[in-house]
Image (cartoon, rainbow, N blue to C red; front, side):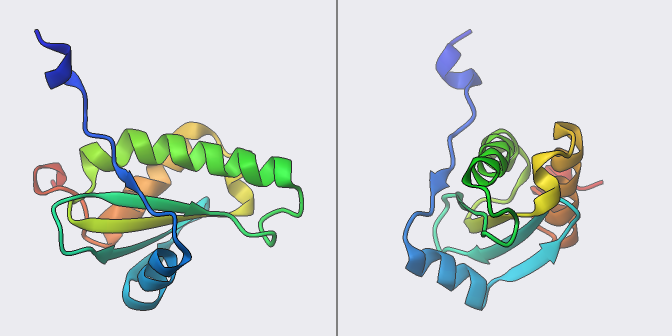
Length: 125
């Protein structure tokens, strides 16, 4: 087997403030215990995501970075496989994300995708 065919595509990243504001102002959102998922169509076939964790989640930069790393790992693992393409996603970290088991964060992300009707068609059941 060719290893290139086994790799899932890596999602693009949202980095500019204007991208985050566009998703926040025009997109839909769903809140779970460990994260808030915001999503908006981007007019392309690509899937992009961004992360944000405010000081409200934790005044400690170390903890905010931990939350960001955990959310990034989930986004890279799940979004290309489970989420609908052609969307920009913003994952907003919450205080609970720092200590929540990794499996629970995955469950929350999938739940948010399902509630926003953004799961890939073959994933719905």
